[in-house]
Image 1: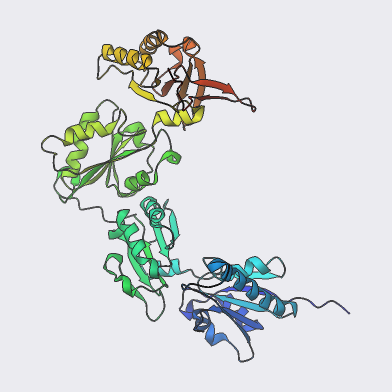
Image 2 (image 1 turned 135 degrees about the horizontal axis):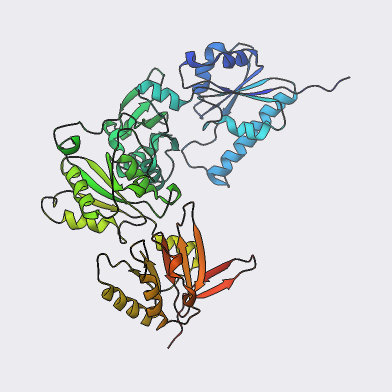
Length: 508
């Protein structure tokens, strides 16, 4: 006598609510199943069952999986998580009994079974024990976009899907960086989601969709929605930015719109997108105009509708006034700067101009970025672990005598030094002269970190003795970190050298 075969488990996606949006395969599986299982709250009503109701037979065995808790508290010894784990284990055991008896079990799921669906808890507990098939369904995100009649993502855009239950700070950061986004699970979380949209500067673009494809469907600008009216089955949508309005092409310079504008000076960090902060990423995405040195502007992805204004590296003042003029005529302008914009970069140039007429009323904000010094220090270890000074070796904007005086003072104070702008095609002697000045106060074996193109394809980090520092190996893309008397170089067990400066300084 052959051993009885087990039944087959199906996770059946029903789509967003309209029964006519169920797939043919979903209808076939429901019609052929022996057992129909669905989740419900303790009131007993199940949206999943109501969607599939026309396809249920009188002889179907129905397994109603009733949540022990939803939003209320529980006296379960394991708390909410413990109560839910016990529920899922019990529900899986009930379905397993049917499968062991050879019955086919179809677990109904709104939307798609593996997209924030309750079915996945059964899948994780049963799919490795029984033959299983998942029937995909139209997601609520797709349904919401369809009902809004607005493209969700286009071209190179990335869609971000977020649960509204995330902390407000996390939601804000992710929304600021998103091309397009859908925030699910609203209901009680709606006030938090709304604040996050407002803080990220995305509230004006946000749309609200409630019960998409169902009878009680509602859509509206999210900013106009009463928080008290928002059910769980609703969603916030940030649609595609492609072809989104960025102001008209009026008669002002550059085709600007004439409304209120602003300038945001954005730090890009030392290299590519991995070094961008979420705030910086969001400001770059939101800008109508991007202004910057060509090399740095090339790091920023091209977005439809944005205007890019590239210029040479030595026209900071002209670039700043150009950006402020755009903003004065209503454009939202991002001025890009490598590293941190406040460290030998564009923030000062913009503020210098913004504090004079006719730009005094133009809003200006600074968005920080990872500095070259910190990036190089991290690659080498922790050379900036104690007090340090930051000095630019460029004498283009200040006399060399001032630089030399500051080098001597910092060296005499036994500070670690981060030396920016050490050399270029037209400045070839400053590194050698700086080495001579520092050797008046530092031992020849003081460690020096040479960090070149940190984060970029030509990244190279070397550690040399101060006495062996070769100016020919230093260019404009290199930063120098010169240790103090306390800085140490240690070879670790894996053969790598690390540089670090102790946090504690010896008493005199």
